[in-house]
Image (cartoon, rainbow, N blue to C red; front, top):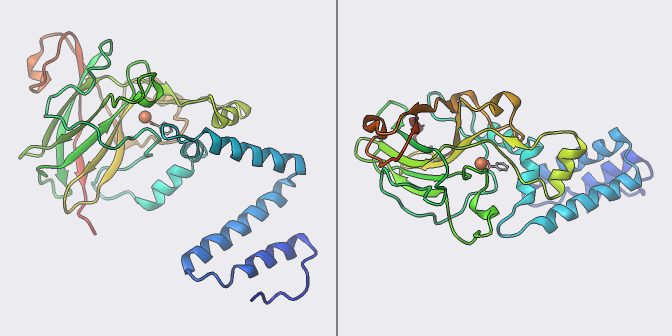
Amino acid sequence: MSSVTTRPTTEDDITAAVIDRLQGTPDPRTKEIMTSLVKHLHAFVKDVQLTEAEWFEGIKFLTDTGHMCTGMRQEFILLSDTLGVSMVVDLISHRKPAGATESTVFGPFYREGSQPRANGENMATADPNGTPCVIAGRVLDTAGKPIAGALLDVWQANSEGFYDAQLPTHDQLQMRGQYHSDNDGRFVILTTRPVAYPIPTDGPVGRMLKATNRHAMRPAHVHFKVSADGYEPVTTHIFDGGDAQLKKGDTVFGVKDSLITEFTEHPAGDTAAMKGAKVNGPFVTADFDFVLKPAK
Ligand code: BEZ
Ligand code: FE
């Protein structure tokens, strides 16, 4: 039961009355989150002196964001990402672990059930015009011991900057693979060199970026979800250190220095650099070790 007996009449009374109405929330964490949300939402409205027309525009924006969502498109994740909220959640959830690989945004393009692949297998057969790229390394624990049988779930955009879900053939899983580390913790992925690309701008998030004069670009990267029994999984990317977009910034604020790696160019036929993958023509290589910390 509310302890406020008189009707709220001022802006501040309303905030107190709503918070008071939350007192009976049975779950303490829900109560904490709702109380803070109401406090900050009311403070925001008062801070900018929001007009009725602006409030209605905000409602329309959120409605449009919801309408844009489908099984293939998650506009709310995009909104969270472009407002930096996803990275704040990432940073407070995964404080920089000593020696372990840092995490970054999940993004909206992960799909369950991609194809299991042998080490060296090409996950980019749908991208014949891209520059071949061998990504190789080891999965290690924080003491430097190899982790055998770790799962590396890998996904990326094609060399034109589109994820499979954005293509007319969106029902097919492309540019993805599930690799496993071998007994020495080693993995070898054959793909195409990632390129910088714009996030989708044909929805409300695109309108927000345009209204705030922001670019929509992400620097070239490959996504990884790396997991192994007994270890904390990490969702992350590796970024191509040679990509000019790195200097211009990431529209979702996902770059961390430790995730930037060199992509080295090789002439056709440099078999030593192929690490067992079958590569035609000139190619690039990236070496990256993933380090997992023990599960809590
Ligand atoms: C991505 O890298 O796939 C991505 C991340 C955040 C927003 C849009 C795309
Ligand atoms: Fe991406």
